[in-house]
Amino acid sequence: MTFTTYPKQNQKVDYDTIVIGAGIMGSCTAYQLAKKGRKTLLLEQFSYGHKKGSSHGASRIIRYAHSSPIYMPLADGAYREWDELSRLTGTKLYDACGLLWLGDENGTRTRSELLAKYGVQHRVFHGQEINKNFPYLKYGDEWHAVHDTKAGVIFADKCIEAAQKQFLAYGGTIHYSETVLAIKPLDNNIIEIYTNNHKYTCRSLVVTAGAWLNRLFPEIGTRTEPTLVGVNFWKITSNYELFKTENKSPVLIITELDDEMFSIPNVDHPGMIKFGVHAGVPLDMVNSNRPEPPKWTYTIPGKHIKEHLKYIDSSDPAIKESCVYTVTDDQDFIIDRHPIFRNIVIGGGFSGTGFKFGAIVGDILARMALDEDVSDFDLKPFSANRKVDPFHKAKL
Ligand SMILES: Cc1cc2nc3c(=O)[nH]c(=O)nc-3n(C[C@H](O)[C@H](O)[C@H](O)COP(=O)(O)OP(=O)(O)OC[C@H]3O[C@@H](n4cnc5c(N)ncnc54)[C@H](O)[C@@H]3O)c2cc1C
Image 1 (cartoon, rainbow, N blue to C red):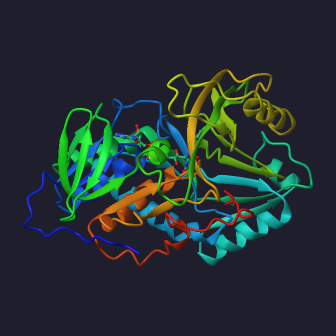
Image 2: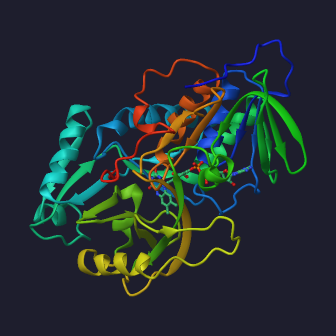
């Protein structure tokens, strides 16, 4: 049940909409709002390019291939919106070098059938065919793979830069190093926002606060947990050309029993690939001294590299970094209105898979903030107050 509606247009406010958090979700939402001519303020607690959230760094995976159908329409919308942002800013935002998703026969069949249903070009390989097509790989006959040819690397830092650049070009305002401390919805449906140095009023609010969401809205039923993950880069020892995106070296996802791993070719650091495990440990966001991720976040990938990848030094990562996932109990996202205040919209819980959807999530959140129709997407699985099935965990 929702209790509030939107304030009348003639009520005076500082901004039509305020967006909290300038990660990829907030930046894309702000860009979409300003594109529609709304007076928009984007507030970010840290400085531009900070590494304390989830959206920093050069690369993420973009793909059509998914294990669940709920993400297919979002993937379609995301490609459309990234292409539009790319056209507007004259920036290449992703490289379609392909995705090779390695797993067992059943999982591969499910993913292939889903791609076929949505008319997405792909190929399926088995055992030695994998190694023949990708000569730096060594997988046995128990392995199957689907090759999503439109997938690839999305350039994360360039996407944030493009979204914010276009937001500013449309007349938007960004304040860095300004922390939202309190949100106060008033009886007349206007919202007051209190920061460390200012008070603002707005007609609608979008909260895309990543791992800090729980601190702003502890009352949200769908819980999110900040999770510390390791981001490891491994040295290429020879045959560098096999790991270049321009040579169509694909990104990898590997599903092996309960482990899910991912790899990105040579994009972030010269002469290295990114290879990590899609899992982490709970992180206390109040403590500003971030611990190092546990050892298994690089020993599990190291073991897999040793067994299945040629020309990579698997002894130890050459560079170890960390990042934060914001994970719901079922690992699906939150894209919804606040359960009580209809003009407060929430985007969160994007876990380790949200970046690629940033452009379409921004479009949806902006439409919700303006009370526009969003029925072209089924957003039920992304409710802020859903009953979580403890046995359901979203797969990659
Ligand atoms: C290691 C790793 C690998 C990943 N790989 C992929 C991948 O291959 N493909 C993919 O699609 N996705 C991937 N992801 C996931 C993706 O990066 C995230 O889902 C996405 O970046 C989440 O963006 P966000 O805007 O929700 O959060 P964030 O980027 O964390 O942004 C939230 C922002 O809100 C600000 N904020 C919070 N509270 C306040 C406040 N009170 N006042 C002002 N500002 C505030 C924070 O400072 C922060 O900047 C990966 C993530 C990680 C960590």
